[in-house]
Image (cartoon, rainbow, N blue to C red; front, side):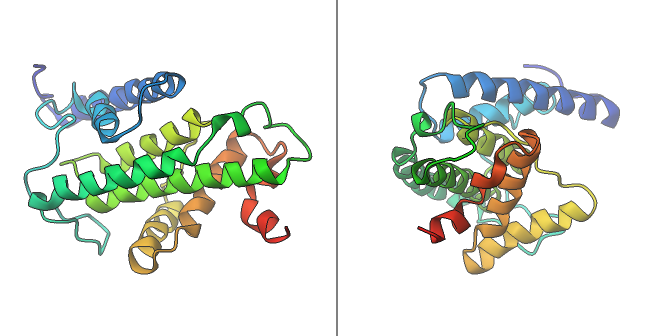
Length: 221
């Protein structure tokens, strides 16, 4: 097992390298036919922390946590496995409804069909859901937000879209936290879904992005 970093600079360097390594893992895994489940989420977390914090890498927490700058109190550590198991069942049902073939090759289509619009909408919804459920349960000692964002990318990339970067610095950090809180309080995923679609728009450089506004399009049917 790797030794812990000797100072904060080394820790940050190893974590930064871990994010790059985990991003590559996500891209490779997305192209495979391997199942996406919470064992996969643990594998993402392990890639981030196996050199920086090996004793927690890929392992669920065994202590209670408080989240800085958030009113959300994660579940007691004794409930983590139970809640993950419940989420695992939900995830399997959500993934049954996604179909990459409906999206691949359509990204530059100037006139997407309603079927394409709906397919993209479902992918974004599942990406937002898995992002939130990880941050809500907070199953890991550290790195839950980073793991959640990479897990969301895994959903996007597996089902024909592209990985994104949700900006969480400065004013965007408050918007991101508010989007998660909106789900906690009201079960309203729209703000987080909006952040994801904005990330997609940015990655695709504004090309044919009108069909990402799938909710408005769907309402016109």
